[in-house]
Length: 385
Image 1 (tube, rainbow, N blue to C red):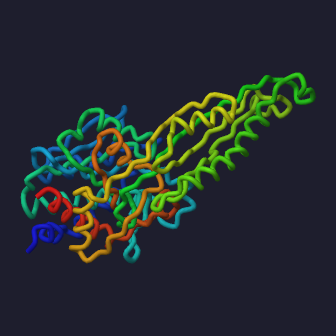
Image 2 (cartoon, rainbow, N blue to C red; image 1 turned 135 degrees about the vertical axis):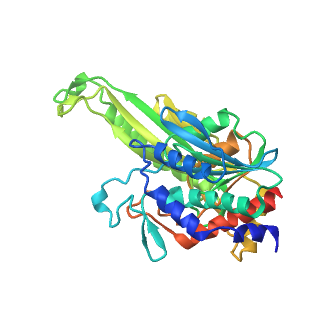
Image 3 (spheres, rainbow, N blue to C red; image 1 turned 180 degrees about the horizontal axis):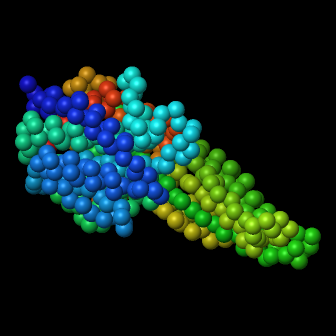
């Protein structure tokens, strides 16, 4: 039997499903319990199966976990994140958010889709490769990282520590309906502060109201967004967006008769390849007449379709009788920094409906999770053997 197929056949479906159930039952949202519970569980789980996991503190109380199969140069990183978003109002859920309830082919729970399904599939693939071959000529590294849903502190700490050195590619198991995603949007988180001068609401001429200035800026964004969408639409990523997400201006709680001293606007900007973040930020500052504070800058990234990692991903899908469909990631992932900072070719490929992350009654198809584990095991052999 072909070695890649042998690795795929070595995946144990019950093992993958049981692991997924266990992961979903551990709350790991932040703020809240955070990633510690998932990391402690995986640390023990992998240790019992012959691995020697390494913890790395991405931030106080927020650990990454790294585990290797094999040694040497030119390996493959299998990356997933351990944090999830809050379940919100649990009374809105039909299924308990941390119950890992199975109904039919679906497992329900916070993080089932984004992305404990993908993480369970990555671990299942590593275990399958270990069962089938012991190890491959080049190493596999599992990177279970913290804070993907926040400021991506986990992957930033991972790269800063050089934990990508010696590896030549990264597979990110985000929920993308098993599309081979080679493009990821960039993101800017911006804040603008419009100064004013306090005065009595009955005498606005005595002050300087910052709210109209901020409102005019927000309305003007629509025209800029339309021009960007005309010039930078992408076949796989769609359109760029300039989205106001926060508008704050008040003199104090209950002070409805006071002109505030400042108005604040926050923007979530999503960019496509070819857009210059610096030029866009300068343009917005000129429009607003105030400075722009850049809270986060995530570049748009892409991996060439000709890269060997892409070819391995496509071949693995074909070997298992699955269609090869290309796609783009509408937001940033940990793969953004593995590509931009670490310089690794990155393929984002994972189980789960793209529209389900962060929703009430989030779910993942169990057959797709098992299938993803088989694809990952075959991909690893094709890429590393």
